[in-house]
Image (cartoon, rainbow over the protein chains, first blue to last red):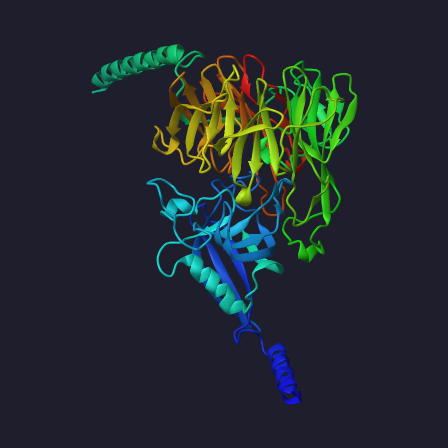
Length: 190
Length: 395
Protein backbone atom coordinates (compact mmCIF):
# COMPACT_ATOMS: atom_id res chain seq x y z
CA UNK A 1 0.00 0.00 0.00
CA UNK A 2 2.82 2.31 0.89
CA UNK A 3 4.53 1.44 -2.38
CA UNK A 4 1.38 2.24 -4.36
CA UNK A 5 1.03 5.58 -2.58
CA UNK A 6 4.65 6.37 -3.30
CA UNK A 7 4.23 5.55 -7.01
CA UNK A 8 1.05 7.62 -7.20
CA UNK A 9 2.80 10.50 -5.50
CA UNK A 10 5.71 10.29 -7.89
CA UNK A 11 3.35 10.28 -10.88
CA UNK A 12 1.55 13.35 -9.58
CA UNK A 13 4.87 15.10 -9.07
CA UNK A 14 5.94 14.29 -12.63
CA UNK A 15 2.61 15.46 -13.97
CA UNK A 16 3.03 18.77 -12.22
CA UNK A 17 6.56 19.27 -13.52
CA UNK A 18 6.04 18.24 -17.15
CA UNK A 19 3.75 20.52 -19.19
CA UNK A 20 0.51 18.98 -20.38
CA UNK A 21 1.92 19.09 -23.90
CA UNK A 22 5.58 18.90 -24.81
CA UNK A 23 5.06 21.81 -27.22
CA UNK A 24 3.34 24.15 -24.78
CA UNK A 25 4.29 27.52 -26.17
CA UNK A 26 3.09 30.98 -25.34
CA UNK A 27 0.40 31.28 -28.02
CA UNK A 28 -1.88 34.11 -29.07
CA UNK A 29 -3.84 35.37 -32.07
CA UNK A 30 -3.66 38.49 -34.17
CA UNK A 31 -6.43 39.75 -36.41
CA UNK A 32 -5.49 42.21 -39.15
CA UNK A 33 -8.52 44.08 -40.46
CA UNK A 34 -8.37 44.38 -44.22
CA UNK A 35 -11.93 43.94 -45.35
CA UNK A 36 -15.08 42.56 -43.79
CA UNK A 37 -14.82 39.24 -45.59
CA UNK A 38 -11.12 38.97 -46.31
CA UNK A 39 -9.03 39.85 -43.29
CA UNK A 40 -6.33 37.72 -41.72
CA UNK A 41 -6.32 35.77 -38.47
CA UNK A 42 -2.84 34.70 -37.44
CA UNK A 43 -1.88 32.31 -34.67
CA UNK A 44 1.50 33.16 -33.17
CA UNK A 45 3.49 30.92 -30.85
CA UNK A 46 6.79 31.67 -29.24
CA UNK A 47 9.06 28.63 -29.24
CA UNK A 48 12.11 30.37 -27.92
CA UNK A 49 13.34 33.82 -26.97
CA UNK A 50 12.87 35.83 -30.13
CA UNK A 51 11.67 32.79 -32.09
CA UNK A 52 8.11 32.73 -33.31
CA UNK A 53 5.99 30.48 -35.43
CA UNK A 54 2.89 31.65 -37.24
CA UNK A 55 -0.04 30.24 -39.14
CA UNK A 56 -2.64 32.42 -40.87
CA UNK A 57 -6.16 32.00 -42.16
CA UNK A 58 -8.63 34.13 -44.00
CA UNK A 59 -11.21 35.58 -41.62
CA UNK A 60 -14.05 38.07 -41.60
CA UNK A 61 -15.61 40.51 -39.17
CA UNK A 62 -18.69 42.73 -39.32
CA UNK A 63 -20.49 44.09 -42.34
CA UNK A 64 -19.04 47.59 -42.29
CA UNK A 65 -15.75 49.16 -41.26
CA UNK A 66 -17.25 51.23 -38.44
CA UNK A 67 -16.20 49.54 -35.19
CA UNK A 68 -18.69 51.72 -33.29
CA UNK A 69 -21.70 50.27 -35.07
CA UNK A 70 -23.27 47.69 -32.74
CA UNK A 71 -24.19 44.46 -34.49
CA UNK A 72 -22.85 45.76 -37.78
CA UNK A 73 -19.27 47.05 -37.70
CA UNK A 74 -16.09 45.06 -37.43
CA UNK A 75 -14.20 44.46 -34.22
CA UNK A 76 -12.53 47.42 -32.49
CA UNK A 77 -8.76 47.44 -32.47
CA UNK A 78 -6.68 46.58 -29.41
CA UNK A 79 -5.87 43.69 -27.10
CA UNK A 80 -8.54 41.26 -25.95
CA UNK A 81 -8.57 38.77 -23.09
CA UNK A 82 -10.15 35.40 -23.74
CA UNK A 83 -13.14 34.72 -21.50
CA UNK A 84 -13.60 31.08 -22.36
CA UNK A 85 -13.54 28.36 -24.95
CA UNK A 86 -16.06 25.66 -25.79
CA UNK A 87 -16.12 22.75 -28.20
CA UNK A 88 -19.87 22.29 -28.24
CA UNK A 89 -21.32 25.72 -27.53
CA UNK A 90 -25.05 25.70 -28.01
CA UNK A 91 -26.68 28.98 -28.92
CA UNK A 92 -27.08 31.41 -31.78
CA UNK A 93 -23.37 30.75 -32.15
CA UNK A 94 -22.48 27.09 -31.83
CA UNK A 95 -19.77 24.49 -31.90
CA UNK A 96 -16.14 25.44 -31.41
CA UNK A 97 -16.07 29.01 -30.12
CA UNK A 98 -13.68 31.39 -28.39
CA UNK A 99 -15.39 34.02 -26.23
CA UNK A 100 -13.77 37.46 -26.10
CA UNK A 101 -13.96 40.27 -23.56
CA UNK A 102 -16.21 43.30 -24.17
CA UNK A 103 -14.53 46.25 -25.83
CA UNK A 104 -15.27 49.96 -26.23
CA UNK A 105 -14.70 51.43 -29.68
CA UNK A 106 -13.17 54.83 -30.30
CA UNK A 107 -16.27 56.86 -29.43
CA UNK A 108 -16.97 54.85 -26.28
CA UNK A 109 -19.66 52.50 -27.60
CA UNK A 110 -19.38 49.08 -25.97
CA UNK A 111 -19.16 46.07 -28.24
CA UNK A 112 -20.29 42.97 -26.41
CA UNK A 113 -20.85 39.21 -26.77
CA UNK A 114 -17.96 38.83 -29.20
CA UNK A 115 -16.53 35.52 -30.38
CA UNK A 116 -14.14 33.85 -32.76
CA UNK A 117 -16.27 31.18 -34.42
CA UNK A 118 -17.63 29.76 -37.66
CA UNK A 119 -20.95 28.33 -38.79
CA UNK A 120 -21.48 24.85 -37.40
CA UNK A 121 -23.82 23.06 -35.04
CA UNK A 122 -23.18 22.43 -31.38
CA UNK A 123 -22.10 18.96 -32.41
CA UNK A 124 -19.54 20.48 -34.80
CA UNK A 125 -21.57 19.42 -37.81
CA UNK A 126 -23.20 21.21 -40.69
CA UNK A 127 -26.94 21.84 -40.83
CA UNK A 128 -28.00 23.13 -44.24
CA UNK A 129 -31.76 22.67 -44.52
CA UNK A 130 -32.48 25.47 -46.99
CA UNK A 131 -31.10 26.75 -50.25
CA UNK A 132 -30.47 30.10 -48.57
CA UNK A 133 -28.09 31.21 -45.84
CA UNK A 134 -28.37 28.82 -42.89
CA UNK A 135 -26.79 29.91 -39.61
CA UNK A 136 -25.12 26.56 -38.87
CA UNK A 137 -23.94 25.92 -42.43
CA UNK A 138 -20.90 27.31 -44.19
CA UNK A 139 -22.12 28.04 -47.68
CA UNK A 140 -19.28 30.20 -48.94
CA UNK A 141 -17.42 33.49 -48.79
CA UNK A 142 -20.56 35.34 -47.85
CA UNK A 143 -20.46 33.61 -44.47
CA UNK A 144 -17.38 35.58 -43.48
CA UNK A 145 -19.75 38.49 -42.78
CA UNK A 146 -20.78 38.78 -39.13
CA UNK A 147 -22.40 41.16 -36.68
CA UNK A 148 -18.95 41.92 -35.32
CA UNK A 149 -17.39 38.56 -34.40
CA UNK A 150 -14.35 37.11 -36.12
CA UNK A 151 -15.36 34.25 -38.40
CA UNK A 152 -13.24 31.62 -40.08
CA UNK A 153 -14.26 29.08 -42.68
CA UNK A 154 -15.85 25.75 -41.85
CA UNK A 155 -15.42 24.50 -45.41
CA UNK A 156 -13.10 21.71 -46.51
CA UNK A 157 -11.17 19.16 -44.54
CA UNK A 158 -9.55 20.07 -42.33
CA UNK A 159 -11.51 23.31 -42.11
CA UNK A 160 -9.87 26.54 -41.01
CA UNK A 161 -11.95 26.35 -37.86
CA UNK A 162 -10.48 22.98 -37.05
CA UNK A 163 -6.97 24.24 -37.76
CA UNK A 164 -7.54 27.24 -35.51
CA UNK A 165 -9.04 25.09 -32.78
CA UNK A 166 -6.56 22.22 -32.94
CA UNK A 167 -3.70 24.63 -33.50
CA UNK A 168 -4.61 26.53 -30.36
CA UNK A 169 -4.69 23.42 -28.21
CA UNK A 170 -1.62 21.92 -29.81
CA UNK A 171 0.61 24.97 -29.69
CA UNK A 172 -0.50 26.37 -26.35
CA UNK A 173 -0.84 23.03 -24.62
CA UNK A 174 -3.93 24.51 -23.02
CA UNK A 175 -6.81 22.07 -23.19
CA UNK A 176 -9.18 23.88 -20.89
CA UNK A 177 -12.82 24.34 -21.81
CA UNK A 178 -15.56 26.48 -20.33
CA UNK A 179 -15.04 29.84 -18.69
CA UNK A 180 -11.45 30.80 -17.97
CA UNK A 181 -9.32 33.82 -18.75
CA UNK A 182 -6.21 34.13 -20.86
CA UNK A 183 -4.74 37.58 -20.82
CA UNK A 184 -4.07 39.34 -24.13
CA UNK A 185 -5.18 36.34 -26.16
CA UNK A 186 -6.05 38.40 -29.25
CA UNK A 187 -4.70 41.57 -30.77
CA UNK A 188 -6.79 43.36 -33.42
CA UNK A 189 -5.02 45.83 -35.62
CA UNK A 190 -6.63 47.93 -38.27
CA UNK B 1 -8.40 79.68 -94.40
CA UNK B 2 -8.92 82.23 -91.72
CA UNK B 3 -12.37 83.11 -93.03
CA UNK B 4 -13.32 79.52 -93.32
CA UNK B 5 -12.12 78.89 -89.77
CA UNK B 6 -14.04 81.92 -88.62
CA UNK B 7 -17.26 80.64 -90.14
CA UNK B 8 -16.71 77.22 -88.68
CA UNK B 9 -15.88 78.75 -85.31
CA UNK B 10 -19.04 80.81 -85.40
CA UNK B 11 -21.09 77.75 -86.24
CA UNK B 12 -19.36 75.77 -83.52
CA UNK B 13 -19.92 78.56 -81.01
CA UNK B 14 -23.60 78.68 -81.89
CA UNK B 15 -23.85 74.94 -81.54
CA UNK B 16 -22.16 75.06 -78.14
CA UNK B 17 -24.37 77.94 -77.05
CA UNK B 18 -27.43 76.01 -78.13
CA UNK B 19 -26.14 72.98 -76.28
CA UNK B 20 -25.51 74.96 -73.13
CA UNK B 21 -28.92 76.56 -73.35
CA UNK B 22 -30.47 73.15 -73.81
CA UNK B 23 -28.53 71.78 -70.88
CA UNK B 24 -29.57 74.72 -68.74
CA UNK B 25 -33.15 74.19 -69.78
CA UNK B 26 -32.92 70.52 -68.86
CA UNK B 27 -31.40 71.42 -65.50
CA UNK B 28 -34.12 74.00 -65.07
CA UNK B 29 -36.72 71.32 -65.46
CA UNK B 30 -35.08 68.34 -63.77
CA UNK B 31 -32.56 69.96 -61.47
CA UNK B 32 -35.06 71.75 -59.31
CA UNK B 33 -36.90 70.26 -56.36
CA UNK B 34 -39.69 68.05 -57.47
CA UNK B 35 -37.51 66.66 -60.23
CA UNK B 36 -36.51 63.05 -60.46
CA UNK B 37 -33.78 62.24 -57.93
CA UNK B 38 -30.78 60.61 -59.53
CA UNK B 39 -28.22 58.20 -58.25
CA UNK B 40 -24.74 59.64 -58.06
CA UNK B 41 -22.05 61.08 -55.84
CA UNK B 42 -22.81 63.55 -53.08
CA UNK B 43 -20.64 66.62 -52.94
CA UNK B 44 -19.93 67.71 -49.38
CA UNK B 45 -18.78 71.19 -48.50
CA UNK B 46 -18.00 72.81 -45.19
CA UNK B 47 -20.01 75.75 -44.02
CA UNK B 48 -23.26 74.48 -42.60
CA UNK B 49 -24.34 77.73 -41.02
CA UNK B 50 -27.50 76.58 -39.34
CA UNK B 51 -27.85 73.08 -37.91
CA UNK B 52 -30.71 71.04 -39.34
CA UNK B 53 -32.52 71.06 -36.00
CA UNK B 54 -31.74 70.70 -32.32
CA UNK B 55 -28.70 68.65 -31.42
CA UNK B 56 -26.71 67.51 -28.43
CA UNK B 57 -22.99 67.60 -27.90
CA UNK B 58 -21.09 66.99 -24.67
CA UNK B 59 -23.10 68.61 -21.91
CA UNK B 60 -24.99 70.95 -24.19
CA UNK B 61 -28.40 70.93 -25.85
CA UNK B 62 -28.37 73.29 -28.83
CA UNK B 63 -31.29 74.73 -30.74
CA UNK B 64 -31.17 75.23 -34.46
CA UNK B 65 -31.06 78.97 -33.78
CA UNK B 66 -27.83 78.63 -31.85
CA UNK B 67 -29.16 78.67 -28.29
CA UNK B 68 -27.43 76.44 -25.77
CA UNK B 69 -28.86 74.85 -22.66
CA UNK B 70 -26.63 73.15 -20.09
CA UNK B 71 -27.42 69.47 -19.59
CA UNK B 72 -27.12 67.77 -16.22
CA UNK B 73 -24.58 65.31 -17.56
CA UNK B 74 -22.67 64.62 -20.75
CA UNK B 75 -24.54 62.73 -23.44
CA UNK B 76 -23.26 59.31 -24.43
CA UNK B 77 -24.55 56.42 -26.44
CA UNK B 78 -22.04 54.02 -24.89
CA UNK B 79 -24.68 51.32 -24.39
CA UNK B 80 -26.54 51.76 -27.66
CA UNK B 81 -24.36 53.10 -30.46
CA UNK B 82 -26.68 53.98 -33.35
CA UNK B 83 -29.33 51.38 -32.43
CA UNK B 84 -31.40 54.02 -30.67
CA UNK B 85 -31.21 57.84 -30.55
CA UNK B 86 -28.87 59.37 -28.01
CA UNK B 87 -31.40 62.15 -27.36
CA UNK B 88 -35.09 62.13 -28.20
CA UNK B 89 -37.73 64.82 -27.82
CA UNK B 90 -41.20 64.08 -26.49
CA UNK B 91 -44.19 64.39 -28.82
CA UNK B 92 -45.30 67.65 -27.21
CA UNK B 93 -41.81 69.05 -27.78
CA UNK B 94 -41.30 70.04 -24.16
CA UNK B 95 -38.96 67.31 -22.93
CA UNK B 96 -35.75 65.80 -24.20
CA UNK B 97 -34.68 62.43 -22.82
CA UNK B 98 -30.99 61.73 -23.24
CA UNK B 99 -28.50 58.96 -22.53
CA UNK B 100 -25.52 59.49 -20.27
CA UNK B 101 -22.59 57.40 -19.10
CA UNK B 102 -20.87 57.83 -15.74
CA UNK B 103 -17.42 56.35 -16.07
CA UNK B 104 -16.43 54.44 -12.95
CA UNK B 105 -13.15 53.18 -14.34
CA UNK B 106 -11.12 54.66 -17.14
CA UNK B 107 -10.81 52.05 -19.85
CA UNK B 108 -8.11 52.30 -22.51
CA UNK B 109 -9.78 50.81 -25.56
CA UNK B 110 -6.45 49.69 -26.97
CA UNK B 111 -5.57 47.56 -23.94
CA UNK B 112 -7.12 44.39 -22.63
CA UNK B 113 -8.89 44.35 -19.29
CA UNK B 114 -6.11 42.26 -17.74
CA UNK B 115 -3.44 44.70 -18.83
CA UNK B 116 -5.34 47.48 -17.06
CA UNK B 117 -5.86 45.53 -13.87
CA UNK B 118 -9.58 45.22 -14.54
CA UNK B 119 -10.97 42.06 -13.02
CA UNK B 120 -14.07 40.07 -13.87
CA UNK B 121 -17.04 41.85 -12.36
CA UNK B 122 -15.39 45.23 -11.87
CA UNK B 123 -17.82 48.08 -12.37
CA UNK B 124 -16.82 50.06 -15.46
CA UNK B 125 -19.60 52.60 -15.71
CA UNK B 126 -23.24 53.42 -15.13
CA UNK B 127 -25.63 54.36 -17.90
CA UNK B 128 -28.45 56.68 -16.92
CA UNK B 129 -31.30 58.45 -18.60
CA UNK B 130 -31.95 62.08 -17.85
CA UNK B 131 -34.70 64.46 -18.96
CA UNK B 132 -34.25 68.11 -19.85
CA UNK B 133 -37.33 70.32 -20.08
CA UNK B 134 -37.94 73.46 -22.09
CA UNK B 135 -37.55 75.57 -18.94
CA UNK B 136 -33.98 74.35 -18.56
CA UNK B 137 -34.66 71.96 -15.69
CA UNK B 138 -32.72 68.74 -15.83
CA UNK B 139 -33.32 65.65 -13.76
CA UNK B 140 -32.51 61.96 -13.53
CA UNK B 141 -35.15 59.74 -15.09
CA UNK B 142 -33.56 56.44 -14.12
CA UNK B 143 -30.12 55.28 -13.04
CA UNK B 144 -28.84 52.12 -14.68
CA UNK B 145 -31.01 52.81 -17.72
CA UNK B 146 -30.63 53.63 -21.39
CA UNK B 147 -32.45 53.92 -24.76
CA UNK B 148 -35.63 55.98 -24.45
CA UNK B 149 -38.73 56.28 -26.62
CA UNK B 150 -41.67 58.61 -26.02
CA UNK B 151 -45.21 57.54 -26.77
CA UNK B 152 -47.66 60.13 -28.15
CA UNK B 153 -49.40 60.42 -24.77
CA UNK B 154 -46.17 61.21 -22.94
CA UNK B 155 -45.41 57.71 -21.66
CA UNK B 156 -41.76 56.81 -21.90
CA UNK B 157 -40.14 53.42 -22.48
CA UNK B 158 -36.57 52.53 -21.65
CA UNK B 159 -34.33 49.68 -20.57
CA UNK B 160 -33.45 49.39 -16.90
CA UNK B 161 -30.64 47.11 -15.81
CA UNK B 162 -30.92 44.79 -12.85
CA UNK B 163 -27.52 45.97 -11.77
CA UNK B 164 -27.14 49.66 -12.60
CA UNK B 165 -23.45 49.19 -13.29
CA UNK B 166 -21.98 47.79 -16.47
CA UNK B 167 -19.34 45.31 -15.35
CA UNK B 168 -16.32 43.74 -16.99
CA UNK B 169 -17.04 40.28 -18.31
CA UNK B 170 -20.78 40.51 -17.68
CA UNK B 171 -23.76 40.97 -19.95
CA UNK B 172 -25.90 43.98 -19.12
CA UNK B 173 -29.28 42.43 -18.57
CA UNK B 174 -32.45 44.24 -17.67
CA UNK B 175 -36.10 44.74 -18.44
CA UNK B 176 -38.01 47.05 -20.73
CA UNK B 177 -39.85 49.54 -18.56
CA UNK B 178 -42.73 51.85 -19.45
CA UNK B 179 -43.76 54.84 -17.36
CA UNK B 180 -47.04 56.55 -18.10
CA UNK B 181 -45.37 59.83 -17.21
CA UNK B 182 -41.85 60.73 -16.28
CA UNK B 183 -42.68 60.56 -12.58
CA UNK B 184 -44.96 57.55 -12.86
CA UNK B 185 -44.29 54.06 -11.53
CA UNK B 186 -42.16 51.63 -13.51
CA UNK B 187 -44.12 48.93 -15.30
CA UNK B 188 -42.07 46.09 -16.76
CA UNK B 189 -43.24 45.18 -20.25
CA UNK B 190 -40.82 42.28 -20.61
CA UNK B 191 -40.87 39.18 -18.49
CA UNK B 192 -37.49 37.64 -19.30
CA UNK B 193 -34.30 39.45 -18.33
CA UNK B 194 -32.06 40.03 -21.34
CA UNK B 195 -29.86 42.57 -23.03
CA UNK B 196 -32.48 44.85 -24.55
CA UNK B 197 -32.40 48.15 -26.42
CA UNK B 198 -35.58 50.19 -26.89
CA UNK B 199 -36.03 51.42 -30.46
CA UNK B 200 -39.32 53.28 -30.91
CA UNK B 201 -43.03 53.29 -30.44
CA UNK B 202 -45.25 52.41 -33.39
CA UNK B 203 -48.50 53.87 -32.11
CA UNK B 204 -49.23 52.01 -28.89
CA UNK B 205 -46.86 49.18 -29.73
CA UNK B 206 -43.28 49.27 -28.59
CA UNK B 207 -40.45 48.06 -30.82
CA UNK B 208 -37.25 47.01 -29.12
CA UNK B 209 -34.21 44.81 -29.63
CA UNK B 210 -32.91 41.78 -27.83
CA UNK B 211 -29.15 41.57 -28.30
CA UNK B 212 -27.80 38.05 -28.32
CA UNK B 213 -24.53 36.21 -28.70
CA UNK B 214 -22.31 37.76 -31.31
CA UNK B 215 -24.44 40.91 -31.12
CA UNK B 216 -27.24 39.18 -32.96
CA UNK B 217 -30.12 41.64 -33.07
CA UNK B 218 -33.69 40.47 -32.80
CA UNK B 219 -36.50 42.98 -33.27
CA UNK B 220 -39.40 42.40 -30.89
CA UNK B 221 -42.73 44.10 -30.52
CA UNK B 222 -44.70 44.56 -27.31
CA UNK B 223 -48.44 45.00 -27.64
CA UNK B 224 -48.61 45.66 -23.92
CA UNK B 225 -47.03 44.51 -20.66
CA UNK B 226 -45.93 40.90 -21.08
CA UNK B 227 -47.34 40.69 -24.59
CA UNK B 228 -44.11 40.23 -26.48
CA UNK B 229 -43.70 38.72 -29.92
CA UNK B 230 -40.75 38.48 -32.28
CA UNK B 231 -41.04 40.64 -35.36
CA UNK B 232 -37.83 39.92 -37.24
CA UNK B 233 -34.28 38.73 -36.91
CA UNK B 234 -32.29 41.84 -37.66
CA UNK B 235 -32.89 45.50 -37.09
CA UNK B 236 -35.26 48.36 -37.88
CA UNK B 237 -34.71 51.03 -40.49
CA UNK B 238 -37.81 53.11 -39.90
CA UNK B 239 -41.48 53.11 -38.96
CA UNK B 240 -44.08 54.32 -41.45
CA UNK B 241 -45.70 57.71 -40.86
CA UNK B 242 -48.99 56.07 -39.88
CA UNK B 243 -47.11 53.75 -37.49
CA UNK B 244 -48.63 50.63 -39.03
CA UNK B 245 -45.55 49.38 -40.86
CA UNK B 246 -41.87 49.01 -40.15
CA UNK B 247 -38.99 48.61 -42.59
CA UNK B 248 -36.69 45.94 -41.21
CA UNK B 249 -33.25 44.83 -42.21
CA UNK B 250 -32.05 41.25 -42.30
CA UNK B 251 -29.20 40.19 -40.05
CA UNK B 252 -26.81 40.13 -42.99
CA UNK B 253 -27.86 43.70 -43.85
CA UNK B 254 -28.79 42.89 -47.44
CA UNK B 255 -32.56 42.39 -47.39
CA UNK B 256 -35.09 45.09 -46.58
CA UNK B 257 -38.62 44.02 -45.76
CA UNK B 258 -41.66 46.10 -44.92
CA UNK B 259 -43.74 44.41 -42.25
CA UNK B 260 -47.16 45.11 -40.82
CA UNK B 261 -46.46 45.85 -37.17
CA UNK B 262 -49.79 44.48 -35.95
CA UNK B 263 -49.52 41.11 -37.67
CA UNK B 264 -45.89 40.76 -38.63
CA UNK B 265 -46.93 39.97 -42.19
CA UNK B 266 -44.61 40.95 -45.01
CA UNK B 267 -45.84 43.71 -47.31
CA UNK B 268 -42.85 44.02 -49.60
CA UNK B 269 -39.25 42.94 -49.90
CA UNK B 270 -36.03 43.94 -51.65
CA UNK B 271 -32.59 42.37 -51.89
CA UNK B 272 -30.29 45.36 -52.16
CA UNK B 273 -27.43 43.30 -53.58
CA UNK B 274 -29.46 42.69 -56.74
CA UNK B 275 -31.09 46.12 -56.91
CA UNK B 276 -30.08 48.83 -59.37
CA UNK B 277 -27.51 49.95 -58.51
CA UNK B 278 -26.54 47.05 -56.27
CA UNK B 279 -25.49 47.74 -52.71
CA UNK B 280 -23.29 45.61 -50.47
CA UNK B 281 -25.31 46.48 -47.41
CA UNK B 282 -27.83 48.79 -45.81
CA UNK B 283 -27.84 49.76 -42.14
CA UNK B 284 -30.45 50.35 -39.48
CA UNK B 285 -31.82 53.57 -37.94
CA UNK B 286 -33.10 55.61 -40.87
CA UNK B 287 -36.27 57.58 -41.47
CA UNK B 288 -39.56 57.38 -43.35
CA UNK B 289 -41.74 60.20 -44.70
CA UNK B 290 -44.55 59.81 -47.19
CA UNK B 291 -43.49 56.91 -49.38
CA UNK B 292 -39.77 57.40 -48.92
CA UNK B 293 -37.34 55.62 -46.63
CA UNK B 294 -33.74 56.68 -46.16
CA UNK B 295 -31.06 54.44 -44.68
CA UNK B 296 -27.30 54.39 -44.33
CA UNK B 297 -25.77 52.19 -47.03
CA UNK B 298 -22.45 50.82 -48.16
CA UNK B 299 -22.19 53.58 -50.75
CA UNK B 300 -23.44 56.33 -48.44
CA UNK B 301 -27.21 56.75 -48.40
CA UNK B 302 -30.00 54.70 -49.92
CA UNK B 303 -33.46 56.11 -50.56
CA UNK B 304 -36.28 53.62 -51.10
CA UNK B 305 -39.73 54.13 -52.49
CA UNK B 306 -42.23 52.19 -50.42
CA UNK B 307 -45.60 51.64 -52.05
CA UNK B 308 -48.42 49.85 -50.31
CA UNK B 309 -47.15 46.51 -51.64
CA UNK B 310 -43.88 47.43 -53.30
CA UNK B 311 -40.40 48.45 -52.35
CA UNK B 312 -37.87 49.90 -54.78
CA UNK B 313 -34.44 51.38 -54.49
CA UNK B 314 -35.05 54.88 -55.79
CA UNK B 315 -31.68 56.54 -55.32
CA UNK B 316 -28.20 55.84 -54.06
CA UNK B 317 -26.16 58.80 -52.91
CA UNK B 318 -22.51 57.90 -52.68
CA UNK B 319 -20.03 59.54 -50.37
CA UNK B 320 -16.33 59.99 -50.96
CA UNK B 321 -14.80 57.21 -48.85
CA UNK B 322 -11.58 59.12 -48.35
CA UNK B 323 -13.62 61.90 -46.79
CA UNK B 324 -16.12 59.70 -44.93
CA UNK B 325 -14.54 56.26 -44.51
CA UNK B 326 -17.37 54.84 -42.43
CA UNK B 327 -20.28 56.68 -44.04
CA UNK B 328 -23.13 58.33 -42.20
CA UNK B 329 -25.44 57.35 -39.38
CA UNK B 330 -29.07 57.88 -38.45
CA UNK B 331 -30.18 59.84 -41.54
CA UNK B 332 -33.57 61.48 -41.30
CA UNK B 333 -35.74 63.45 -43.66
CA UNK B 334 -36.20 67.10 -42.85
CA UNK B 335 -39.12 67.90 -45.13
CA UNK B 336 -42.42 66.35 -46.08
CA UNK B 337 -41.29 65.80 -49.65
CA UNK B 338 -38.33 63.79 -48.48
CA UNK B 339 -35.78 65.84 -50.36
CA UNK B 340 -33.74 67.18 -47.47
CA UNK B 341 -31.79 64.74 -45.32
CA UNK B 342 -29.89 65.33 -42.09
CA UNK B 343 -27.37 62.84 -40.72
CA UNK B 344 -24.31 62.56 -38.57
CA UNK B 345 -20.99 61.32 -39.87
CA UNK B 346 -18.13 59.94 -37.84
CA UNK B 347 -14.51 59.87 -38.88
CA UNK B 348 -12.48 57.19 -37.07
CA UNK B 349 -9.28 58.30 -35.38
CA UNK B 350 -6.19 58.68 -37.49
CA UNK B 351 -2.77 58.08 -36.04
CA UNK B 352 -2.16 60.48 -33.20
CA UNK B 353 -5.67 61.92 -33.24
CA UNK B 354 -9.13 61.15 -32.00
CA UNK B 355 -12.25 60.45 -33.99
CA UNK B 356 -14.52 63.32 -34.93
CA UNK B 357 -18.19 63.76 -35.78
CA UNK B 358 -20.03 66.14 -38.08
CA UNK B 359 -23.62 67.06 -38.73
CA UNK B 360 -24.60 66.91 -42.37
CA UNK B 361 -27.48 68.44 -44.24
CA UNK B 362 -28.03 67.13 -47.74
CA UNK B 363 -30.23 67.97 -50.69
CA UNK B 364 -30.80 64.70 -52.49
CA UNK B 365 -32.02 66.35 -55.67
CA UNK B 366 -28.99 68.59 -56.04
CA UNK B 367 -26.84 65.79 -54.54
CA UNK B 368 -25.01 68.22 -52.33
CA UNK B 369 -24.40 68.40 -48.60
CA UNK B 370 -23.09 70.91 -46.18
CA UNK B 371 -21.29 69.82 -43.09
CA UNK B 372 -20.95 71.53 -39.75
CA UNK B 373 -17.92 71.98 -37.57
CA UNK B 374 -16.17 68.81 -36.39
CA UNK B 375 -16.56 67.75 -32.78
CA UNK B 376 -14.62 65.08 -30.86
CA UNK B 377 -16.38 61.74 -31.36
CA UNK B 378 -16.59 61.26 -27.60
CA UNK B 379 -18.76 64.40 -27.40
CA UNK B 380 -21.54 62.42 -29.13
CA UNK B 381 -22.60 65.16 -31.50
CA UNK B 382 -26.02 63.91 -32.59
CA UNK B 383 -29.31 65.44 -33.74
CA UNK B 384 -32.14 65.31 -31.23
CA UNK B 385 -34.61 62.79 -32.62
CA UNK B 386 -38.23 63.75 -32.74
CA UNK B 387 -40.73 61.24 -31.48
CA UNK B 388 -42.73 59.73 -34.30
CA UNK B 389 -45.51 62.15 -35.07
CA UNK B 390 -48.47 61.54 -37.31
CA UNK B 391 -46.61 62.75 -40.36
CA UNK B 392 -43.17 61.27 -39.89
CA UNK B 393 -42.01 57.81 -39.06
CA UNK B 394 -38.87 56.37 -37.62
CA UNK B 395 -36.49 58.38 -35.55
